[in-house]
Image (tube, rainbow, N blue to C red; front, side, top):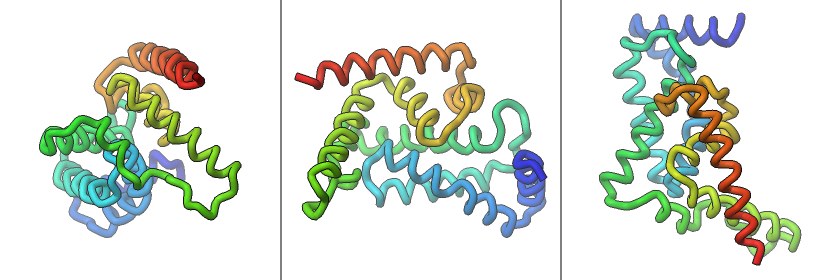
Length: 184
């Protein structure tokens, strides 16, 4: 059975009140949604709370879900994106504050020099990504972390596929410029 067909079947079951089917959707999508949220907020505790809220909201709204556009994953990540933005509004913080948390892949002292250097490079990349516009950040995170197609990203961001391609191109161009500026 194709993934879309299997998801469609599960969604129909959930829409009829089958919570076990929702559990299967939860199991399938929890890790990528959590990873996406964690990369946005930086705090595992906040990411867990927001991710739980995403799935609660999805359960509450799944009756209105229909298979148009990019599908269930895009719909779910759209909820996640809005919940992350709401989190920052409620906290009165901007997203850049999240990268100062020590929860993001900081290497321990036991790592060899090469591993520490690779972690430094990842941190530099994360810092560079945070300097991009919100939409450019979302495009890169959804493309690279979640492996979404441009169509799916367009659905999450409520933009056209052409706009997503342009955002991706600008994001990569800007990211390269920022990273070259960090080579001082």
